[in-house]
Image (cartoon, rainbow, N blue to C red; front, side):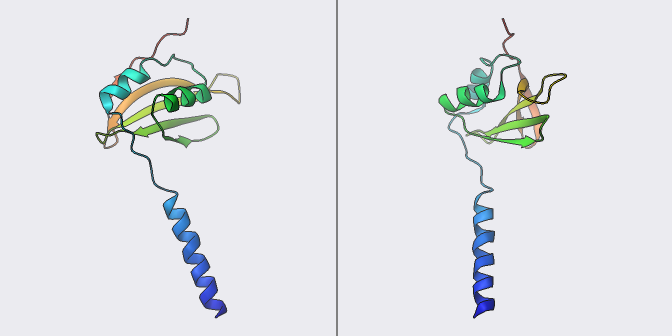
Length: 118
């Protein structure tokens, strides 16, 4: 009986972890996401960027480390919006937006020009 409970607990834990690995498909396609991302200024704070995108209907995930990473957003047409963020030179905090692109099957198909900071 004890072995059975341990097995069921392990199976439940594995199921919960597997469920956490899903990604949201957004309602925007690559053209709409490109227009939205082009409104982001180069050097924008990462958290402000997420807030702006969430407000405009994009939800995604970030892969990376403390110093740099890529925020990606799965789009309705199967492409991804990829936003590169990294810390400002000489700092250890405040990752900033550095570039934006659209990819399909892991291949970059378009580069998005970001607004220049005033």
